[in-house]
Length: 236
Image (cartoon, rainbow, N blue to C red):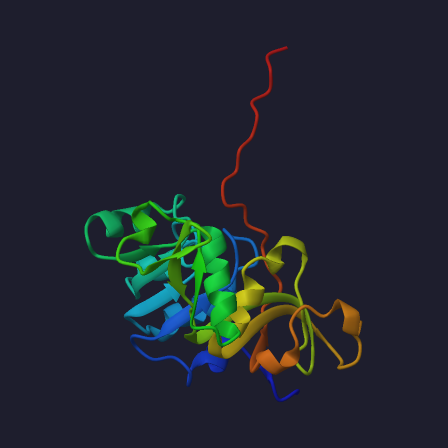
């Protein structure tokens, strides 16, 4: 077995997780989320987590499972509109939330992974997003300082990987997985398939294997739909 490949998600995470840690989690809605790794976190019962993710899944799916089990202390997210348990915990003061514009969140993770501690952006100026943050004028316009994010652990979902950990994402699943992978001390990836090293087109690799410390094969997957909308048939 390749050195980076583990038998299951729990064994890949067991000695990496601890209470109160910060985790960057890839995915968008239910697309490209590290389902097996999230389930493993739930089974390990690690608590007091700060989770950085575009959203918090939906009730009983994705990160919604960790919210239900009360393992998440704080969420850093841009969109949380599909999760009733998230709403309940936030409004009752049980969950700390740091809302962040979507593009800013992606750049905070990218910056953290590139060793950039902070950057100035126009996004959020003059709104609640800017409260308590340093501001600076550039060319007559006000910008706010946003801090880069660098977590203890990144959990991501890839489509195909080679034995060295070089990774390819499938279509929209590339979304937040790529910046999250670099924004942590250790990145663990779950993938649908592992192929021999050298099998992937070098020009088609999205994430170099140097960023991926551990992998687990999570397939087969059920392609879940976040919000199903159907049109009623018209009467004959």
